[in-house]
Image: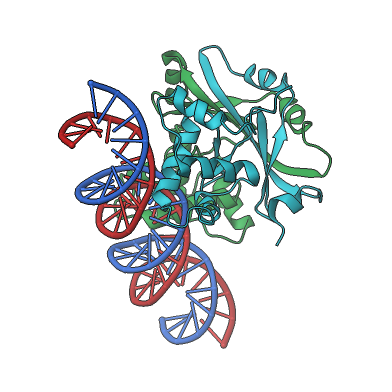
Length: 151
Length: 151
DNA sequence: TTGCTACTTAGAACCATTCCAATTGCTTCA
DNA sequence: TGAAGCAATTGGAATGGTTCTAAGTAGCAA
């Protein structure tokens, strides 16, 4: 086989190595699947998609790999109420909009200063490591289209 | 001057009646328990506390009543990652701070304009019914710990 | 009363997730 | 080359919060 492509440095392999972990076919395919269709799939949905490449992968492995990707800061786990955890490879600061009708989740990019403003409401003595902002409501169809179809 | 509506004894009965529902001992005691110790208890914790008054109440009833209170807008259900749902009788607009060390949850009151500012980041086509803001980190403050979870 | 409906209840079912114990597969290093 | 050692994967069982179901109870209305 040919060498691995030098055109795109493998962020995944690097991050894994940095944590003393190996790059495996399962981890690679799962990460690819998340990058390819950024519609916040559940572990089950990831499992289904990954199976076209790795038909014998187990759901337990999907959970393990997703957890690994989250630990390496390559993927964010997103929870909405008590629904199944969804996974999101968008690493920029962003909020989530949950469309109650379609059940879909959309990324909302946040301007640089907003998280500061929000964190400023914390009284002294509260040291926040992270902030999460979630909207719930209705999204018009064209925006849904945008979120589902492109990156 | 009347008392704050949150502590008025029959706010519950009124709200229930408004939705065509009955005031029952179970619903009253559960609501009292939530008002009395505002430490965001889980359904299980509510069950335990309510049992001192109603020793034979079932966990299913606790779930049912909590759901009813949420429907009547007397109580907010609060979720943090995949942990059990917690219940909060604070009806003012507020965010939640989760202390990772103690596992306790604190209300953070929000200035009136903040939610507007946050909602302003939504692109056109997104119609948000609610916004949720959650902080995670370390709380150094001592004064509130007593009420929340001293052992 | 009779009937109607809301409410409560115990236990079963549900379902996302984690755990477990058994392989399988790299990677050294002798 | 090959044995050791550890990382990773796997199927299935277990877990835990929550919801469902079907039966029983209680309050209101005619």
